[in-house]
Amino acid sequence: MVGDEILTPDSSRFWPCPEYEPGRPQKSLDKQIIRDFIKAEKAAGKTNITLPREIIERTRVAYQTILDALFPSIN
Image 1: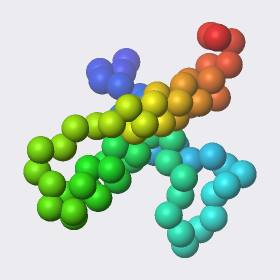
Image 2: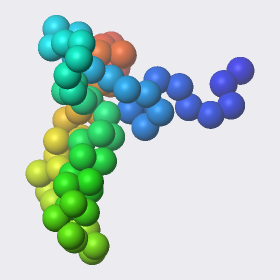
Image 3: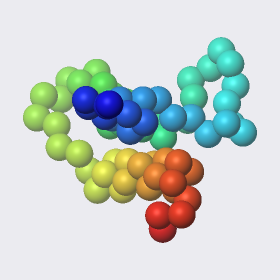
Image 4: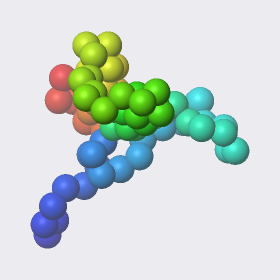
């Protein structure tokens, strides 16, 4: 029995295997896109942060990529 979530971009890290290179930051297919944006905004001194459409769309595409990879027969 699973009592919570498993294999979701909110609880797991997903990286495209062909692009994986040890020792460097990886291209994320998870909520890291949002984390990185917020971190950069805070570093720039911003406190009232709103996600722009571009970040929302990049995150949506990443989540869809994960869904398609894990469950190709759904779509």
